[in-house]
Length: 483
Ligand code: GLN
Image (cartoon, rainbow, N blue to C red):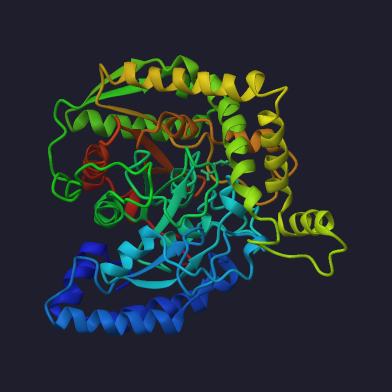
């Protein structure tokens, strides 16, 4: 059963071939068997999941099911879930039981999906390898010595290891696409403003966006149908009609104009990853697409701009965790300053502290113009590069990450090497564009993703382009042997 796609599961549930309770129990059993080692979950909710499954079964019998009613999912632990611990991967929130539900998870609840639990992640979504979690690193199910990618590594591992039918993730600079690439699943970061951020713990508010992490583009389309849409509680969420993302999956690709940025095939890209991407492009040519070299001249500035803007926003967002209103509180403070210092010192991990310091520095009066204001100017130029490129092409393709997954611990002492792993994903967040990673090949037994980027609000095009590739390839159907 756990090999079935969301569409197949939906049909089986409606036909009464399996109940949601049975399906949920089988996923809970798998979590029991595999997750001690993989560490994809921070919290598993067996009682709640079985209760939701029972309600879903009743809803199906009553003929009131949505396409995802009864399907067991899991959510990144960045989404507030009422009555369930929501840690954001941090000691700071280790004892936080959310008093309300995020819009994304509320939408899934309303659709009747089952919540198996909350998924591991880098602390406050800061990281590209899932080694920064207070709850320990997540392992890559393809090779357990390897990172799964981050920060939504728990989501990617859970989906790749079939511990959930699909999952939610969030992407501030690549955290959906990069772990999707490294774990061999399909992940989509929507346009900024397509999905509500309400109840999603903020990292960098102008970049954060939630999206689906699933086994195929079709599954991702079914997930996005539930996630996308206007929310009056998020003032950056766009009031714009949501198409049925499954309706256009089968449009032919003949005449599709693909742009390949020459800056994405330069130094630093693993030649074996490059080969996977070039082979994927060859498949698209067979499907009738035309390919053209383009240029995104600001590419080399993306990492620098991001690592000023994201920490600046993070330092402001994380100031609320003061041990008074929010977050871990130290024992026996002697005065207010001691309370702040020790609560924050104990509650945050070292990467988060790094970012708070960098961000506070970049925003300080004497340096604001030199760093933050300059980074914002670059951000506009990066966006303009993309808009210009999209005058001539329909989608942009390239690698999702410069390398396959690397060994846990191997980049621990080299933050710059770690940050450079985001080079191909960060620019879409800075530009607000939607991007997707689809499994496109293997290198040394590890999956490699192809990244596809589309103009603002063209998620349907991305899903169509991903789905057509998945009709003629089977990379998305491969699964880790030991699983
Ligand atoms: N790896 C990037 C960072 O560390 C992106 C993280 C994300 O998208 N949440 O900030």
